[in-house]
Image (cartoon, rainbow, N blue to C red):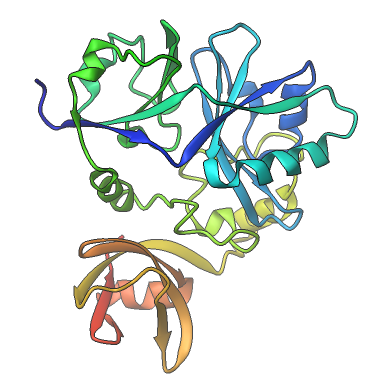
Length: 295
């Protein structure tokens, strides 16, 4: 039994099948990343934005076991809304979206490097392999987030079945330490901007590809430095805070608490406030607690 490696079943995500001869071109004109990067050995993380460049959906795109198959992992609770929007955009394109009912998603994280050779993976973001009706990929956002396994049968590979099951809470600690947002907790649909929430360092944006929905404002924030806020890691002292607590200075809202795990968390904060308090290592009081920016 290997130590410091864990697995958990992901129950809040689902997988869509994308079919039709126009599927790659359709997505290329729609999403923030580059479909040319998707292959049998590489997967991508990407987003769909409003025309103003505000966040709507995030997802992982990967190739399936069949030669021409294309899959997309997205939030289960919003999958119908996502498909409805995609169908609105497709017009006369030959592309079809459907939910795959028989795929189970597992997350393997921690010290997983010993598994790489067994599953023909490289230790790089997005590395992908297909073996025995199982699809393995290194999380395209950050390799420290582990391996995702998409299984279409109940029998897991022995290398995986022997790994200890752990709560998703352990994984949350890793995610927060990496300052990687969970779109269900840390973003506001129709309001959040990618460059204010670390999407560039999560490999979600290709600034060299052609136009896509929301590209103009995203590029402007990149090259003109117009992003007003940022997502950062915080340390909490005192009573536990709650997700959604406002951060105020002189009764003026300057930020909001996002994900929390014990005494650490994420917060959205105005850049000028972050720069002042981070440089001086100062705390901000919130009720009976105080926070400090640590990343």
